[in-house]
Length: 332
Image 1 (cartoon, helix red, strand yellow):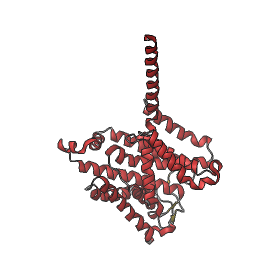
Image 2: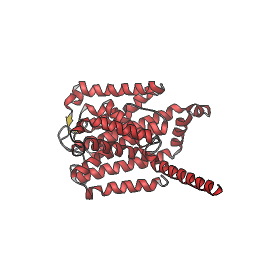
Image 3: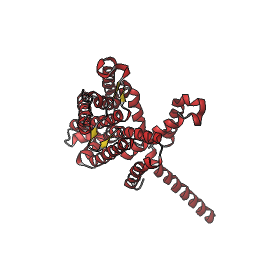
Image 4: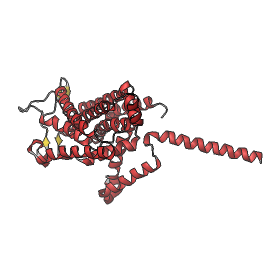
């Protein structure tokens, strides 16, 4: 895309106007996708920008979600929006700091497996203990409030999620353009060369891991506020795998790719689950979704974000081939 900023402005503009034309179901669906997009942005910071393939992102997401409910006032009053959000983000970030401090001592597939192990540990803590309500989960009866912002109102909730996604996107974009972001890019390209130039890469990776976990916790908090319910499945490895597919589908190395991938994945899932389109085959939606993702990766190896460039290159190639053929015919 030649003008990524124009694309991002257009996307957020359309998202802001979406409630004007959409049904209540459409508004709720897009709100959910925006939450997943924020989660995808958090993982993009690790995978696409730092080169760390983490398979435990759901743990931070779930911790943020559970914190939203477990830290609510015992008297049933509405919790403070800023205080509860900050608490969820900090708790997710602290757990990410602890996980990162240990897992970053490993590399490659060992790093992937260690992050998965820590994620499963968090999953079983809320699944098998009274802390997280076990398999039944926990319900939220009173949503946080801040002045005139009433998150019980669908439009207020939608606007708060929209603003959170916008703030997260702008923050990460500016971060990656800073010296810190340049250091992360250097680690992704060649960590050994970074070390040879005098950089201690471990603190940079740990900071990126902690920040990624905190943003994932932010997304989890929004999910809990939207649904008013959390259960252990929010910390399962299935969600970690799904968000990894999102950023690969959208295109690694691009923050806007995480946005595109989240929307593409969620909309494909909705499509293949639709009985109106696929009838009784909709119950086998995993098969259709998997085949669609395989096709996208096969034909668009750089993700959906590179599709316009790939299309232009093919057009230029065709026009050049046609021009050369015409020249040869004239010469003959």
